Length: 390
Image 1 (cartoon, rainbow, N blue to C red):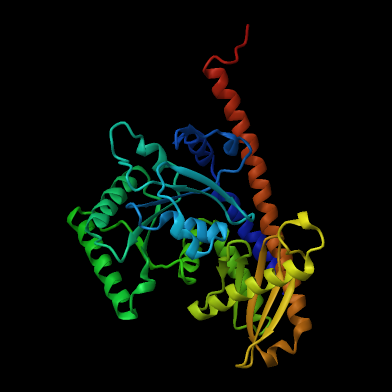
Image 2 (cartoon, rainbow, N blue to C red):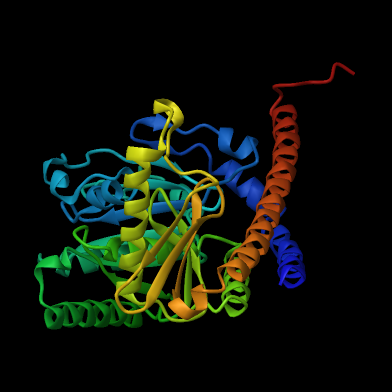
């Protein structure tokens, strides 16, 4: 087990290194100065070697964009979002809860006309990894579909590599049949608009979401996974881990946001995902009460964190800490859990392999930092900021 995992992580580490090229550095550097809510973003992220993927939240006013961000990344209860004020400026937020879940979210007000001649939309789309367009399923979405088509076509021309994600939101008040009908109708209309424009090659993903259940977390998990270059490595490591341990299903979770950044190749069941989220909540809540000795210690989760829950259908849920902010949640039969020693040994090998993937990313960031610093020096010399008297 340990030899297979180590070999796999080293092999995919080379792939990860190849993901970051020099053009990415220069492009991220040139995109750094973008207006945001009346301010100007600095270039510190580019110079320190970490260029975070950018996720844009777009949609009409009152479609639920800010509520999604608050619930997923700020632990705001859904009922509290009723008192949120409408967003009136572009808001940027860094999400860096773990080494893998690291990106920027830009929340755009619905009333902004991005395609006004005075608005440099090309600068924003050029550095974007994913564009999430939120549609209110309980409202008339004709105008939303028109704005979606305009946004997608313009963004695609600037950056064909953007992942386009459509959240059909606020479906909690709809019946199951009505949800499917809404999704089918929106999907068909959006595809017809692209077909009429001769842009069938543009791919978009559609999700039914609500802040009142776990669907919004699962949808965001799928969005974030597409931005993780190490995803194939993580999935392969999980496949090796479960096949050698008698485990039926395993997730690699970001504990803070409850976004799963990887899972094995078997299909994901919504009920299974909800059980994982509930287990993480239980572990964090109990640790807050009994396990946190230092008030300023932050997240009540450390290398000793572990939990076992026996369900009434002879299934065992097993949670173990991987890194400071990541945990593996496994599902297995009770008879398989009798070999807990084997499972723990295989988990140790899996954890070691994950650390190797982290080490590769640290080296990449160090190389990027040196590259960007050299580029910055060349730019300043070219612009006459620095000059050689000879």
